Figure 1 (cartoon, one colour):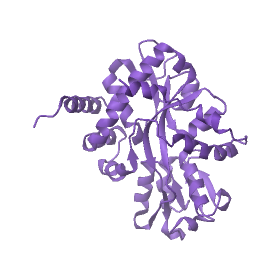
Figure 2 (figure 1 turned 90 degrees about the horizontal axis):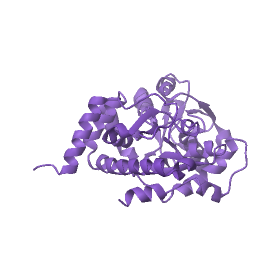
Figure 3 (figure 1 turned 60 degrees about the horizontal axis):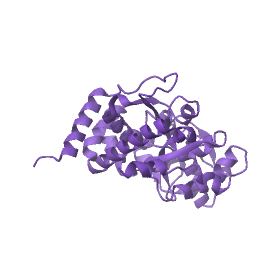
Figure 4 (figure 1 turned 90 degrees about the vertical axis):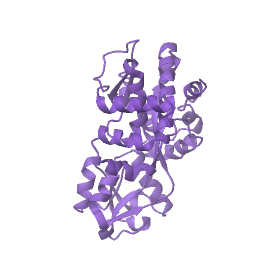
Length: 318
């Protein structure tokens, strides 16, 4: 049976992307130019996959570079990826940040050492847990502890670079980790039979595309961004429909074993939307983030304004 045109086009995109393997990652430009839309992305995570595919299809119209919300607020890019916690963190100083699309979601869990006496969440009391501080992974620790009747004061939370987590956990320098992929699976692999997977309360990291109210209000840049969102929506549909096509692609991009990507794939979703519960999640996180920043929590109205669904609605309408 012949593949439908959309599938054949996607297959050509995957082949071109795999062959290029990074040619779209450009240095920061000094200023915005009308012929390119600059997007800052996380170069180390599986969540970025639909953006890679969409950017490859867009060709010269889109320029990807490594970067997150700080690159956005510095004016180096028109949009940037980051989890929802980072929109809360950065918007206290830059209230013009806008979340415009959830590209991916990741279901967190905690990897712990059985030999540290850990079997369940309540056993984390008094233990040393590594994470990326003030991140979605850090929030998951707080949420899991709260669900078990504890707080961060009952454990020692330490900041650690994700690539260092597997060896630190295996050597016993820490007792548990909360982090995204691929560091989480690598950490479990480093422990082998000593690994315990703690499933705390449900929480999905929202890996979002963010922009600013200034970009949203600019007709030219807004139009380019909406067009790119259309590309992400199309790419995400293909990612959901053909995981066997894209798993090798992102494995090559991140220099990961394809088996590892397949092992963790079920933890990801690629909605390319604004989830109904995104605002609820951010409202829940705001007091925690405010405490980390030594400031007063903002009211829900101030959090709601950080989410702008209008570009997504415009993109999906055509």
